[in-house]
Image 1 (spheres, rainbow, N blue to C red):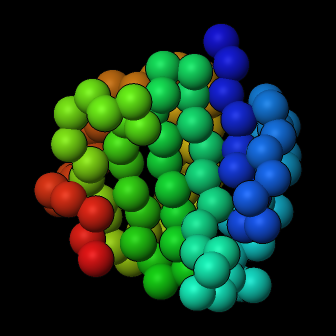
Image 2 (tube, rainbow, N blue to C red):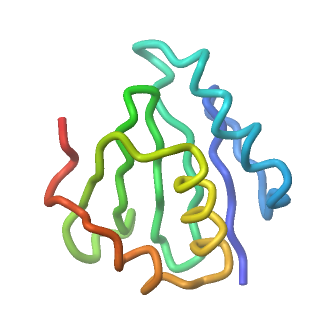
Image 3 (tube, rainbow, N blue to C red):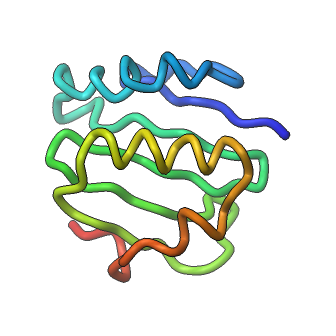
Length: 104
């Protein structure tokens, strides 16, 4: 299985190590109006994006299903969900108490 991380400035990294996920999240401290989020995407096209505001968006970027969101989720929880997504455990991520839409 394959996955990739999208960094704040737009560059991507394939199969980022789990040890690097906290640093990926920490990039959010430099977020601005143009560079708003970091994310991890699985080869299935499921993507989990985190924003500086505490918003987390769960969506299939290929358009399968509707986007969902959670607000005020902890850094540790985001990292845990990224790890599950990287492993291909889509159903584990989907179990969270998601709200419909992008939350904006």
